[in-house]
Image 1: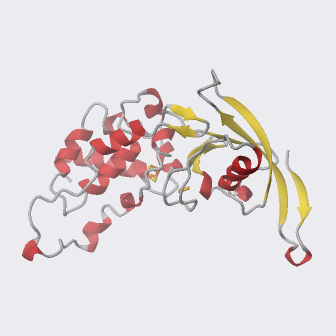
Image 2 (image 1 turned 90 degrees about the vertical axis):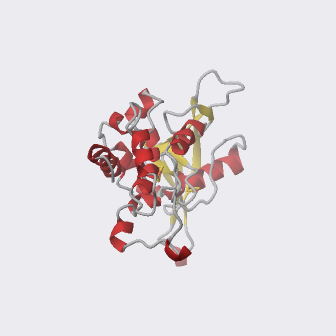
Image 3 (image 1 turned 135 degrees about the vertical axis):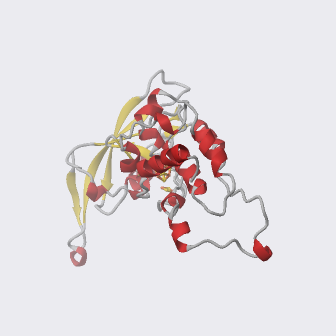
Length: 252
Ligand code: SF4
Ligand code: FES
C-alpha cells in the first residue's frame, strides 16, 4: 500500500513523498533453503529510482541486503534485476513509472545461478561473451601505418550493437536461455555482431562459424523478450537476424 507521507515545503508544493512497499526476494545461502519475499516500506519521491529504494533499505533498515551497482547512471550494467516481472536497470527505473498503489516486486534476474539476494553468478554469461571473440582482429597493418579508414555507411552497420553495456537483461529474459544454459544468448550474439559487421575486422567468418554451432544463433526463437528488455534500446532480435543472414550468405 502507498500513502502520502508528507507535504513538501510551500515553495515546492508539487513534490510529495509516498510510502512505497517493496517486496524483495531475499536469499542467504548460509541460512536459507529457498528464497523468500520480504517487504519493506520506503519513503520515496516520484523522481527517485528503485536503486534509491534499495539504498534506503540497505543503509537504514537491513545492511545485509545484497545487490550490485556501480555507476548509478545506466552505464556500467551491474544492476539489472527483475522489477515487477520485467528485466530493468534499478538505476533507470523511476518510481513515477511504477504502479505504487501495489507493492513493487524486486528479484534477481533469471537463468543464472543465484548467489545472494539480488546477486547472480555472471560467469556463465561472460564465458559466452568471451567465446565469440569480442575484440577487433585486424591481421594487416593499416595503409601508411596510419588509422584504418571506414566509411560512414560501413560504421552505421554496427552502430547499434556498440551500445551494449553487458547488463545481461536480454540474455536473462530469454526463454531459450532459461531452459538451455548452453545457448550463447542474445548478449554474446550482439557483441559478436559488433565485430562481424566491422569492415576493419578480418575474423568475422570465425565468429560466424562459432555462432553457427548448435548452441548458436539457430536456438533463437524470435520472442523479442531481449529487445524489450534492453535498457540501451538495442534492436537485439534484429542483430541476431542479421547474424543468421550473414551465416546463410557465407559472410557479412
Ligand atoms: S544487448 Fe542490451 S540488454 Fe543485452 S547485455 Fe547489452 S545492453 Fe544489456
Ligand atoms: S548502476 Fe550502473 S547501470 Fe545501473
